[in-house]
Amino acid sequence: MKGLYLVVLIAGLTGCAQHSEQHAGTQQTPTRSASEVIKHAKAHEWRNVDRQNVLKITLPTGAAYVELNPQLAAKHTAHIKQLAREGFYKNTRVYRFVEGFVAQGGDSSGNKAIKTVPAEFYHSTAQPLKITELQGDGYAPVTGFLNGFAVAQNASNTQTWQVHCHGVFAMARGNEINSASTEFYVTIGQGPRYLDKNITVFGRVLEGMEHFNRLQRKPVPNTPFNPITNIEVLADIKRDKSTFNVMKTDSQSFRELIGARKNRTEPWFVYAHNYIDVCAMPIPTKRID
Image (cartoon, rainbow, N blue to C red; front, side):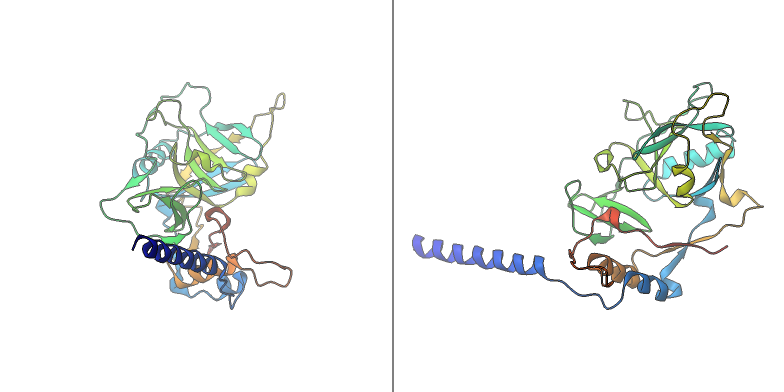
């Protein structure tokens, strides 16, 4: 009986392995390219970004617009909006620039009053929080998208956090977990995923990444170093009517877009990997006004 059980067990495992290999190698050829999916997405598959949750950061070469993520980091969102409305960031600067990594700004002088906000490294829910899932990776069991942001989750889907992809907006901190106060950063290179769950990420740049990329790398004598004219809540700026739409990441078009990005159909491509990681999925965003 033991011998028979072993034979059956080996056969079962072999069958599972073959099934896994076949499943892993299965490619579903997209019927439309990524650009076609975006072009033909229906109106109801786009979300109008709430101007109350958009920061306008005015830099030397122009303005960047950042959508905040109150669902996953409500305290940080409220905190930085309050600072913006108090005029805290007027005439501060982006004082730290690390090539291919981050641009960090705020009051580097330490002369302004420091306010701290409790860490929100991840958002916990009693029940699993549904996201548009991709395969997991080395940094998280589950990755995917939630309300227009790239996110990750634990295996039970009860912890959700925004991940460090290119162009995310986060609050810097010291060694103390709850020491985040007023200093923020934007990732300007490949996403440093090893920072996930070590710091609060609570937004992403909708438009204007080029203005972060064009910042000075080193101070120049007698020249202000990367001054920030102001950071404002977009809804408060009557003269700026900027409005943005983001493709809903739980829509059918976005799911089709994932497939089109996994296996590119454009003539230039000679090999399809049938895979894409969470930071390689740019979330379609367009300016309406």
